[in-house]
Every structure is written in C-alpha cells, then in structure tokens.
Length: 174
Image (cartoon, rainbow, N blue to C red; front, top):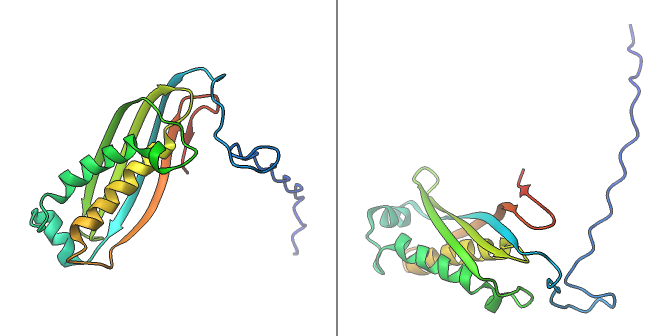
C-alpha cells in the first residue's frame, strides 16, 4: 500500500549575515571603536595540528631535534605570538592579556602534534585572534625547528574552539 506523503514544513529562510564590523558605511577598513563596551572577563580557546613524517615525529618524541626541545621552544613562541597579535593583524586592538596557556599533544598514530591555546583578558574586546595566533605561531615554530628533517609538514585544522565573555556571550564550536 502506498504511503501518504508526510506534510513538510517550509524551510526556514536563512538569517541575514551579520554586518562586518571592520568596514564603515563606505566599505573602508577601520578599527572598531570599543570605547562604549564594558570590560568583561573574556576567554578564547583555539587549536591546530601539524602532521609530519614518522621519522620527524620520532625526533620530537625522543627530544632529539638538532635545534633542541621542539615543544618547549614552541610553547614560548606561542605565548609570545598571543602577546604580539596586534602587531601582526592590522585591525586588532592591543589587549592586556592576563593569561596564556599553551598545551601540546603528541599523536604517534597520526604522526602529528596538536597545539591548543587558551587566552584570557579583562577587556572590551575578545581574544579569539590572540588564541588563533598563539596556535599558529606555535605550529610555525614546530615547523621551523624540524624543517631540516621534513619540509613537507602540513598545518591544518586551525580554529577557535570556544569563546566567552562580552556582549555576544558564549560560543562553542560544533
């Protein structure tokens, strides 16, 4: 016996895109004015991975890279990267960062190193860019320290995992 069609609800129309805040009404790039925003505790977490050849991964795991302790140097570089974000990204505000925590996770099966960073401030704008910069600079440092052994390393999956604080509230990646 044929089934009767189930009633379907009309699709929800897409929500209009949020206006881009780094452009004025004439389309000119500008730094967003955050003076009227209240300072709040803001936190952002980001992550990313660098994949490498098994022999290169073994150097990291054994702490035998020619340039020294890859993870220790990359951790310091990531922290420094978070602190220098406004120098690198033209429209970022310089922020009084109150905390940067960077972790590295070695995955022997995938021959990869995951960098995760959490950045905090009490301020008028978020620290997502600082967390992303910390991760990217940490991974770039891993690359720099190992490039003599493996120029084919690949950085991927660099993204914000979550942010909290501010007018837009909390957000967590799917």
